[in-house]
Length: 218
Image (cartoon, rainbow, N blue to C red; front, side, top):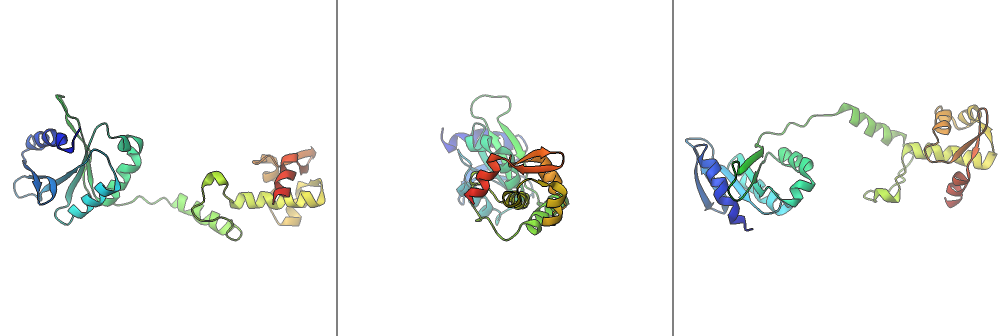
C-alpha cells in the first residue's frame, strides 16, 4: 500500500459532504474547501508516528480543521488507540481511518478537531500529593523501570516495621505502633503485602524468612 492509495477514498468521502477536494496543495496532502468555511487539511500516512503528528501540528497555522488520516489496519493505532486519541484531542487534531477498495463505508471519523478542556481528577491529584508527602527522602531515580522496584511510602513504612522486628524479635503490634509512632502498624502487619511478617500468637508478630532476607539485602 502507498499513501496515495488513501487519497481517493478520502476524496470521495469529503466530496459527498459538499467539499471541493484537491491533493498536494502547498505541502498539504489533502485540502478540502466548502463555502466560506475554514479549509480542512488532512495529512496522510501509512503509520501513526511522531513525524506525522508534528506535521499535523504545523498545519494548524493554516486552519483549525486539521486531521490525520491513516489506514484502518494501522498497527500503531490499533495498539495504542485510546491513548492516541487522547493525545490528538489534547493537540486539537482530528483523526480519520480509511479503508481502500470497494466498501460501503470507506472513511470513519474517530475524532474531530476541537479545543481541549482536560477533565481534572481531584482524587488522583490528592493521591499524588499524599504519596509525595509521606515518602521519606527521595529513594528512587526518576525514569527507572518499575520492574526494578519502586520505593513507595507504604514500602518504607513496612521496612521500618521489618527493621524493628529484626532488631527486637517478636513484638506486639501495639508496641511497634508506639515505638515507631506508626498508627497503621497493625494494618501493615495484618495485610502483609510483601510476605515479610508472620503472626506468632495473638497480636504478636515476627519476621518471616522472606522478611529477614529482605532486611539482610539492604
